[in-house]
Length: 287
Image (cartoon, helix red, strand yellow):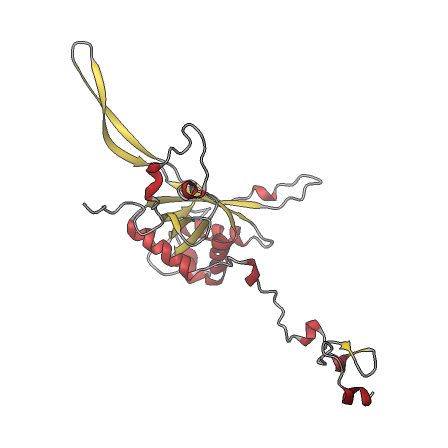
C-alpha cells in the first residue's frame, strides 16, 4: 500500500529507512559512519517570513513607505514568535456502579491566534510610521471611524489586513521543515514606550510588531513556501560575497604601480610588466 500524503509531503521528511535497525541511545552510543547517517537531529533557528499580501489601502496611500516596512519585516527581523501547539480536547464517558470513566477525543484546537515579529527600529521610525497609519486609517485614534486616510476603496476587512507565509528551513536554508500561512493579519498595538527618557541611557530600539492572525497549514502551503525560497535566495557561501568594488575600478583601487625593470623603481607604467621571467639577452643589452 502506497503512503498517503501528510503534513510533510512536498517538503523535507525523514527518509532514512535504516533508523529502526539501530538502538539509538538505548544502552550506549554508536556514532560510526553507517549509524550516524540516521542520526540527523532537527536544528532550529533558520526562519524566513514573507508578506505575500499587503494591506490594500496602505499600498494605495503610502506605497513607498509600505515597501520599506515590508522589506524590514522580511529581511531585518531578529525573531518570529507565537506558534503554539495543537491541543486535543476530550470528553469523558462515565459508567458503571463506581463511575469509571475514559476519555474520548472530541476536537483539536490550534491555539495560535497572534504572532510577533521582532525588528530593530531605524532612525525616522519607519516601522512605527506604517503601524500608526495602518491602525489610525482603520480605526481612527480620536473618532474610531474607518477612513483609510482618504482612500476611496471599500472599507472592508480584506482591504485592511495582510497575509504572511512563515517558513522554517533546515540548516541549508533551502529545504522546508515547516511552513504556515498567517491570514487576516492586523497589528495589535502601536509601540511608544521607546520614547520614554532616562538620563544616561541611549539604547537601541527593538520593536516587537504583534499581529492578530488565523493560521493555516497544508501541503499546498508547503509548495508555496518552497517556491518563495527559490524566488528570494540569500547568500549561502561567504566566498561569493560581493565587496562593492570592481577589479577595474581605478577610482577606488588607484592606477596601480609596480617594479620597473628598466629603472629599478616603483612606477605606474610598470604595473603590467612581467617581473617573473628572467630578462633575455636583448632586453639586458637595452638597459
